Image (cartoon, rainbow, N blue to C red):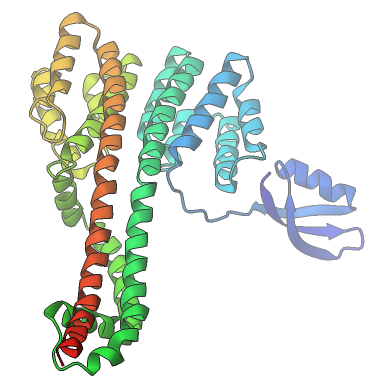
Length: 397
């Protein structure tokens, strides 16, 4: 419910100001009248909220509930009111749903209101709802979008879950190294100081140990600054373009290209089936890929399409997609079933991406274990070798 800043006057003529929640100014005036006050002036309190994109899971829930209640015949204003009063949503979602409701009450189209709240709602959602407002099938559109966002969320969650164990192993390696060089190795410093000569491995270990134990605060500061400035540097367009280019060509380039192709195909299928022109479909779908290098190539793709080149031939020139994608698009163009072919390949690519991620994790796990074994083995060699040599000297004496 909106909050108003008001000035009022009581029966004695005394003025006062304050804040009160009310549906509108008429409701505010009624509440003040019940308290024996007369409204002099009122203005809504505008809260500064930074708009940020909704999560895929939040978009999926929104589209599911909107589609289900629309099918049940619930009016749009009442529907948005129900969504805003849902106790399970975040305050940010509540703010967005109230904004949608207030604008719809004023006669503004739902898609136009979503567009004014960008980037909270993605372009795909905006244009799909805009098309459904004209065709009158918002319930079907919303449920289709719910299915799409659910699939994308599942892929992201599966990726995060698959990387949990490797992250734990990497954190364990870092922890073991810090304990060894910060605590264990200094215990041998007095013993090693009595020896005339030390093996190279031992000298390296002692140097690292002295550095870690003596400058640990410097390591933390440098590490924190590296993470902080690294994130800032990665936001620079030219740097991000280079990084995204490497993502399509590195060891995991095939996996990334599969994910990019699936996102593009699924979004293009949804837009094309809604009756949106092909060039507009391609423009919107290119914004959902998630890789600046691949997205930067779509300016030429659009020029080719507008010049009369087929979509499959234009897409065939894009680096960062799998080779199968333009072939499937070509079949869809020839058979007139482009939307169905795109949906089919998107489902197939999502499945392959999940399999590839599983294989990648299986490779990462033994690699991290081997790295840990090498570190521990190097430490053991550096510690045991001089002790063994000292025992040899004592035995020989």
